[in-house]
Image (cartoon, rainbow, N blue to C red):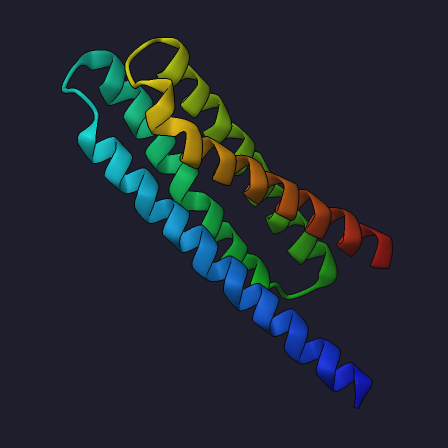
Amino acid sequence: MMADVCSRRNQMNADALKARTKEFALRIIKLTSALPNNKACDVLGRQILKSGTSIGANYREAQRASSKRHFISIIEIAQREADETLYWLELLSESGLVKREQLTKLDKEADELLAILTAISRSAKQKH
């Protein structure tokens, strides 16, 4: 009975994170679509589009992992993509290509996703 409750709670958390990473990807798509049309924004936009949308894709793949080891490996990829996305957000802001205020919410969400994925990875490794 208790294991069933925990299993349902974990599934709800997994579904919530799946939705959250998808929403983040959609926000990244909107950001890159609104970037100015110049060489720097083309390069940075392509990079952040790749990393920002792959967080959710990798999280979804991890949910279907064939083993605990595979799960950890894919979660760590999602972690790295979240960290990389933070880097591209920093560059967009610090270069002056996008106003800092416009990136605050995306930056906060990327940071929170990184923290969540890091916690998931640590927890999975402890159980492994």
